[in-house]
Each structure stands twice: as C-alpha cells, then as structure tokens.
Image (cartoon, rainbow, N blue to C red; front, side, top):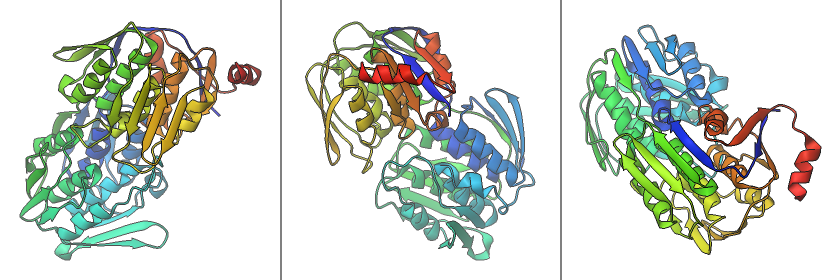
Length: 433
C-alpha cells in the first residue's frame, strides 16, 4: 500500500502553480455529455476524480483525446445514456451529475448512487426534487441504481426553490435545465465560484444561463449545445491549502494562477492569525514569520469560509497560541480527522459541530490516515509542521483532489515522498517520539 512519508520541520519557500478547480471540473466533464460535437477543456486538473469521470464518459460512447497534461478534447456526438461504467460511478460522488446531463440530452438517465468521501450524511433529495420539478420521474431502484425518465423524453422548465443551499443540486439542476423546454428559475441557489464556472462553460457551448453566483439562477432551455473551447478556473481549495500550509510551516510562498477574490475569506482568516497575505492580479504571496494567533471560524456556504478548508485551518490552529473555536456549519460529521491529529499531540475537543482547539508548541510525527480528501491534506500539513517522521495512509483520498501534491510541496522545500513499504520501526519511533 502506498503512503506518504513526511519529514517535518522545513519552512516553505518558493512558488507554486495552482491547477484547475476540482469542484468545477467534476461537473463540467459530465455536462460535456450534452454537447453535440467536440468541446476542448483546458486547465483540467489531472486527479483521480477527473480521470474516473472521463472513463465513465468514454464508456457512454464519447471520444476522449488528451492534447496535453491539462487539456482534453471530448467528442460527445455519438454518446448514449445507457451502458456506463457503473463500478466507477459507484466510487465517485460527482457521478450524480450524469443524471442531469443524461436527462437534459436524452430525457432518460440511468446511474448509480454516488460514492466519494464519507464525512456525514449527504442525501441527494434536493437533486431529485429539482429534476422531478423539471418533469422527470426519478426512481431509486434495487441495487443502488437511479433511473429517471421525462414525459415525451424532454424536460420542461420549472420554478424550483431549494429547501437548503446545495452546491450539487444547484449544478445538477442547472445542467439538466440547459436543454429543457422553456425557462427554469432556481431559487435559494448556491453561489460558489465553481457554479459560475459551470454556467460559463454551458453558455460557451450555447446555453442561456443568467444569475449564476447569485441566489437566483435563470435558465432558458435551448435545443442543442455545440462544441467549443473552455478553460476551467483555478482551484480555490488547492490554493487555500497551500496558503494554510505556508502559514503553519512558516516561510514565504507565491501562489500563482489564482483568483484572489475567491480567496478573500481564507486570506482574512490568515491575516487574523498574524499571517501576511499580499494580493496581486493572478497570485497571492503568503508570508508567515512569527507565532500564529488563535482565531474562531465557522464554515458557511460561499462567500463564507469554505467547509473544504476546515480541516486544514484547524491543523494550523492546533499550533496557534491560545484557544480557538471551529464550528462546522455545513456537514454533520467532518471531525473524523481530529483523532489523527491527537496522535500527533494536538489538543482538540469536539462536541457536535464544534471543535475547541488548545494550541500546542509543536506536533510530533506519527502514522496517521487520511479520512477523506481534505482531511488527508490536513494530515500532510500536520506532518510538514511536526518534528520527526509522519506516514500518511489512505492517500487515494488525497489524490482525488490534488494534482501532484507531493511534488509541488517538494518544490517548496517540504520533505514529502511517496513510498510503498515504509520503514515501520522508524514510524513506530516517530509515534513514540
């Protein structure tokens, strides 16, 4: 089993290039199923989630051609709605976007219940509510399959109010409505940057979507989407992860290929903790030279502090002077990683959705596991800060969302390597350290 071996204690210095946004790419690839022709997607992150989705799209009859490491051409001229690689579908959360794209193009869909990281109950009831409002009869069948069919094999526009803000449901409904008959209005919509990116992608292929980035999105259905070229936005969460890593480890890092506005809430919290953040048109410079200060944070839908940055920031706060309080305002069970941090000496108490963090002077290397994607990134940050050696297991979660994470960290001076058979006596010594 592969894992990361991290020798901690190095400050981070240099420059890092941020990849395309994972949360945008995993919706844009399924949405490409609706394009009658060839679409060229640039700034694609090469991570396991996007590779899986491209394989699923290929199993539906799409032609996939990699132009270079970050550009793909997708030809969906001859795709179908049936016969997908269901084993891969079951392993990834974003496979539910194929329901929206299949229904949008064919008026019928067959998929599986989605998989992915497990950090609390994440129902798809708002997805089903929206697709039903568009005229689809959606049925969860035996064996974990989801089947949907629209009367007359075409969706119709509708007024949809989401009972709770849901990024996934907003995007899935928007995809399906792009080719529905008539106008769809999505109220109480999520406002994340990747929702805007998905709308921009669909519009560049001929859709008519207005209001993405606000709480009301209006979609006027079109009969056909045509080919084109689109570049995915930079990844807000990858950028934030490197910002927090620099804050926690100390040093100075220029983080390039970012949209600073998307990082406002992260930058503000780091400044509150005593970190210098300088903004430039397409980059941010993070400088951390002194002791981190305590801070309180509550995760909220955009433009609030993102839940996907909560584990990473909590790791930095574990080294901050004083008592910090972190409140998880989005998911029910996103503190599984706390037990791993405790193995390294962190002092964190969790009560429901609230974590009370007493800062400690240092962490100590230990064998730990990545509980999910962002928790895995937090374990890597902890290992970079810790004295001694840390082994991070279950790195398949990390590779779902970070392109060449060890390589990018090594370029900044972090000692992170991929190993197949770690030196177990050394790991035990680090844990005892």
